[in-house]
Image 1 (cartoon, rainbow, N blue to C red):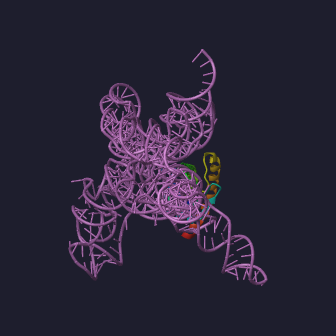
Image 2: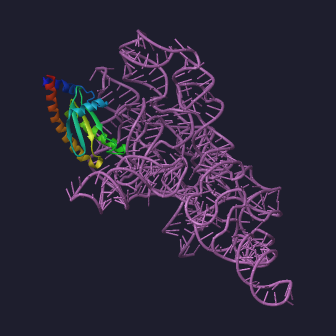
Image 3: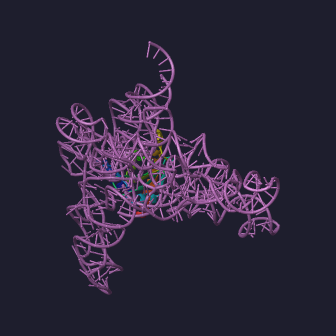
Length: 140
RNA sequence: GAAGUCGGCUGGACAGUCGCCGCGAUGCUUGUCAUCGGGGAGGAAAGUCCGGGCUCCAUAGAGCGGGAUGCCGGCUAACGGCCGGAGGUCGCGAGGCCAUGGAAAGUGAUACAGAGACUUAAACCGCCUAAGCGAAUCUUAGGAUUCGACGGCAAGGGUGAAAAGGUGCGGUAAGAGCGCACCGCGCAACCGGUAACGGAAGCGGCAAGUUAAACCCCAUCCGGAGCAAGACCAAAUAGGGGAACGAUGGCGUGGCUCGCGCUGUUCCCGGGUAGGUUGCUUGAGUGGCCAGGUAACUGGUCGCCUAGAGGAAUGACUGUCCUCGACAGAACCCGGCUUACAGGCUGGCUUCACCA
RNA sequence: CGGGGUGUAGCACAGCCUGGUAGUGCGCCACGUUCGGGACGUGGAGGCCGGAGGUUCGAAUCCUCUCACCCCGA
C-alpha cells in the first residue's frame, strides 16, 4: 500500500518534465508544518518538515528582521536556501519544508551552510518515516 | 611641493560552468514543457521630509477653521528645491553658515538676584549741600566755617542676560547730551539699482530693551484620499423574513457649515465577502551637436529604448589581475531634500614655501 | 504603502501644551523598632531627560534633522 502510493508520487516526476516544486504561501500552511513537530535544529538554521498531499515538495522560508536588518542580507539567505532546496528536490519528494534562519550568515559561511543543510536533509528523512507511519496509523 | 576649500565623475574588471525572473521566436507531448535569442537594481533603490503626475470622490466649488512658507529677482509641472544677487556673521584667504517680513496694530512673557525691569522705571552704598530752612562757632556789622534735615545727582560701586550711547574737553555744589568735537545711532531730500538694498547733502541730542522656532499681523500657497487608488471579467450564494421610525432624514465627504450627487432609513435573523486580468512602465526620459542665458534652465535637431515582480528575480564555483571591493535591493512613476558609504579618478580657487 | 505614538533614576510613569526648582510609586543603602526577619518609621544615594544642531539671557520643555522601539488601517 505504502509502496504503491510512493510509486504514484515519484513516477510522474521521473517520466514528465514538469515543474518539480512549489512554495508555501498561506500562513495556515506554515502553521500545519509547525504543528507536525518534525524538526532538525542546527547552528545557523532549523528545518521543519511534514508530509503533504501534493506531487512535489514545497518550501517556506522564514527570516525575521531581528536576524538581519537589511533586505540584502535577508534576500541572500532566502536565495541560498531555495537553491539548496532545488538541488535536493529528489530527496525531498512529498514533503513540506520550512527553513527557520536562526543566525545571520553571508557568502564566507557558504560551505558551512551547505554542510549543515545536507545534514538537515538527512535527518528530516528520518522524521518523514515516523510521520508517514503515524499518518498511516491514523488513516487506518 | 605642503596645507586648505568648493565641486564633478565612478562605485572591481575579464573568461568559463551550473542555477534564478520576465520577454520574443520555434517545436509538439499545449505544459508548473523544451531549445534558441535577448534583457535583468541604485547613487542613494533608503528615510518618507517636501513637491508634482496619475486615479476616484463634483469639471474641485464658497465661507469659517487649520496648515505651510517668509530678504530680493529668476528657473521650474511644482516645491520648503536650484541659480544669481543683497545684508549679517565667521575665516589671513578661497570660501562657510543664516526660518533674513512686521515689536509706533494689539495681547502676553522677562524666573532668581537687585534699590530699581518698562504709562521717560528706580536710589542700597555713594557724590553734593549752591539757592531757601534750622542749629553751633567765629565776627562790630555784613558775613564766613561746620553740622543737619528737606532736597539735588545718576559720575563710580554693586545685581543681572538686559539698568536708556562711547571717549575727551568745557561746565557744575555735585552732576547730567547740559554744551562742544570725534565716533556710533535715528530720520532723510536726492542719486544708483527691476528689486532686496547701497551711497548721501541735510536734520535730530539720542529715542521704553529683548522675545513673533509666544499668541498674533501682513504677503503668498494649500480640497480629500491614495495603485491594497481605480477599471474590467467572473464562479458560488443572495436579491428573503420580522420589528421600529418617517424625508428640515441617511450615505458619498475628509474639522465644520453651505453646496453638489445618489438614495427611504435603522435594528435583529439568514446568506455572502473567492479568483483572474489590467493599472505596469515611452517618460516633465536620456546621449551627442547647435543656439539663447552670468547661471539654474530653455529651445531646435539627430540618435537610443534601459527591470516590471506579486511572499517578491543577480547567487555559487573555477581561473587571471588590481588598490582585495563600502553603504546597501526597484514594488505606480517622476523632481528635490536628508541620511549611510571602502576607496578611486578629476577640475577650479586660496594661503605658505622653494626655483626661475 | 499609508497613518499615529513613545524614549526621563534599576523598573513603571508624571513634568513638556504655558521655557527658569527634574518629581511620584516600587526597588536600593543606612539608622531605629524586634530575640531575629517581615511590615512600619526616619534619613540618604542614584538621572548632563535617546543623539546632533538651532532659537533664547536661559531648553527635559520650542523648532529642524536623526536613531531605536511600539501600535493601527487596507
